[in-house]
Length: 151
Image (cartoon, rainbow, N blue to C red; front, side):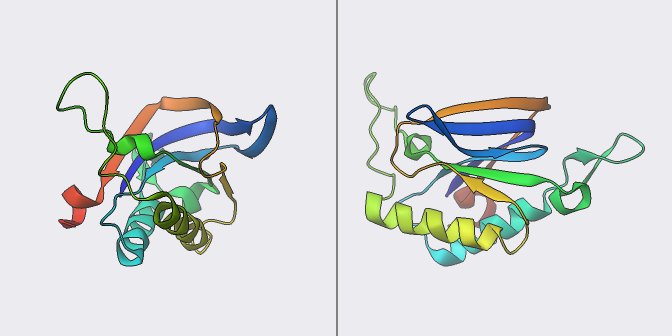
């Protein structure tokens, strides 16, 4: 599982000209699911995400988490995080989770996130989406379950 986490002052996702999810201060997360991912991996990733301390404290140090600042989450599925560009110029997505499995884990991630964060917004799985955000910093972190947990 991969997460691209951006600290934002605001973010939204639009489908067919309609805003389907939006947040203020918090994290906009692009989520990629691999064929080998499980609910256990997803739970661990969400727990790690919820504790990520990249908001500034009173002394300007990145020491505060989402809960410390009343932050919100916008989680958007993005299978292209598993693009394999080793051969040629056209990416392969063979490592991305099959749509049914990936959608199920995406929904699981959303439900797990709601255990930690009061406001969790989302995109629409499999839809053509337009994402808008104001990256605060900029501050971007990449979580990869393979690197973090060896799975």
